[in-house]
Image (cartoon, rainbow, N blue to C red):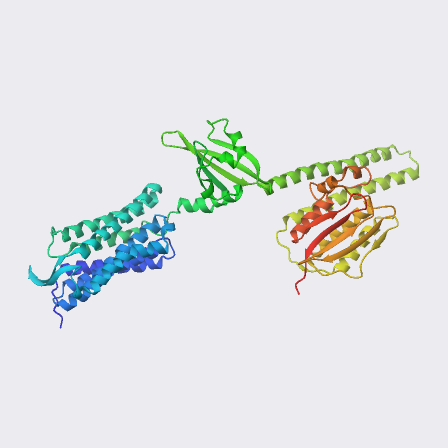
Length: 567
């Protein structure tokens, strides 16, 4: 039967063990907060360390003491190991936490624990050990050997390394994080001093080991941090993670404009990986940067550039890096992709010019007609003609307004539910709309049926109306219009072919953008240049594309594609 020797110190050791166990539970519950898992495992290791020492020291049986010694060292080893991992994680060096790091950090602790498990078969850890009666207690006495000192040095290095990492976090982070880290580092260093005194025989409370007693104080400090210091509630974000994941391109250069660092977005912009450009002057990859080097006194500069083969437009903002001496150490260059914004601005500018012109013309004509009607002495037939002209002008303005409303709906509607289209019915409806407003003799050639695609019927009808209207306006005399469809890989291409003069390459390049009309057609027919811009936007929204085919002599074939219906 085991013999116990209980003294008042027993309860201090017990308090330290219980506090460590409570910290382990609290840390585990705070997952997945950064560092909380390693903190919990570290606290659990301290708990094993404390309980092993408690149950071994206050017992008089050697076999029992050896069992508790193994539990004590299991806690000792794991607490030191997870302390370093906690420090690495909390100090935001997670990129170091690789399988290789875990292995090398655990190698010596594993060897040490094997020595402890087999301590009765060798003298690598202790030269000798046994029981002795000292100061009224049956004690486990031993003489340290090489294995112990190797572990002690390694353990201290791990504790100090963790402390240094956390001190670095103190320097680089705001005050709220410092209030968390300083007590933790202080507690870790505080644990080393009593342990050193115990190992070197300078123990002020001999025969008791003061190290587990300090766990009580460290545990109380950590509990206060959890409750009042917001430990794991507020954890700093690593600057390198922000730099890596920011969507805008970032390049850092030195005084000589040599590239020091860049993020992934910047690599995509200049088309080179960071490893290939470090130390190389930025001008080799971004010659336009030279325009911003004229005034080095400016702390912030801006320029817009087209970069890459895809002609993306970037607003480049350059901010000087100022050292503590107030000298410029380099620059941070930010690339903001404003391609879509610029295209939208250009489109709106062209849109405003077009609409203002096309609304102003019918309004001016109507104003003149109204002045003529005010005179009151016109023959009835002339009055009827003026009324008809006013009516046509009103219809023209209504068409422009309707086109604007349609364009706004297409621009602002983010999601569209694509459904199988009754293209035969859609084409019939579109033909009836354009024939009603075109009195000339028209021949339209069409297939008996169209292949089924996915889309949004009201918008697709607008595409057909625009294509058919243009074919009638700019076709031959009389106009002959052919419509059809081709099955492609995953898509259906619908098309409208006219018998007009055709378009040259320059004219084809201006279609579908900026609400433009072909110069030679402006004086021939009425129009406002909105139609093909709307067609392009509708097709893009529906996941398709638009285009025109013409040899410049024998008419044009305008097409749009839509996704096929899945079988």
